[in-house]
Image (cartoon, rainbow, N blue to C red):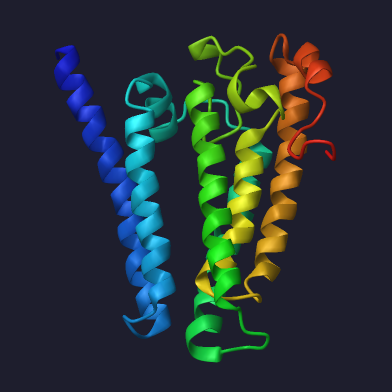
Length: 232
């Protein structure tokens, strides 16, 4: 198979996977809401379409990274599997609870419009940080594993100059932004537990990298903070 055909096939898989996930979220959004005039749901899904396209163009020359994210290689840590078992349903609880609160339950306190706008901005900021981390780090996998098959080394450029795990920083920010942009304060409760799991995963991943990735120990001495500058 020619390089061009391989590239076209990979591009198709990227688009198919990204939009298949989005096509799952759109019906969940409006079936849960029980109506189509839930404008926060349109904003949420519209923003996700935007970032799917931005990611596609930003990583168009990172085919090895895209392959890894579509189908990670062997070596995923057992505790990382547990993380996904816990965090995936917890995210959906946050997502669905936020929509139910905003559309059916109207729990107090209600979210002011400006706070919803803040939620949109936080969500976008978090996604931008994640995208910058993906662009900088060609080993940005969706699972925790040492990519010896790809000759993994330490990334020290882009947002990795400031924190060791910028992807988690972005994830933290857009997790906070998600319930707010959907119109719910109550969705922050499962969001809080999602963030706790994220901190735990970061700590375990950081220890793994120190023990198994050459050069990471020295890097961790230069870049002191894992996720939040000046704090942790």
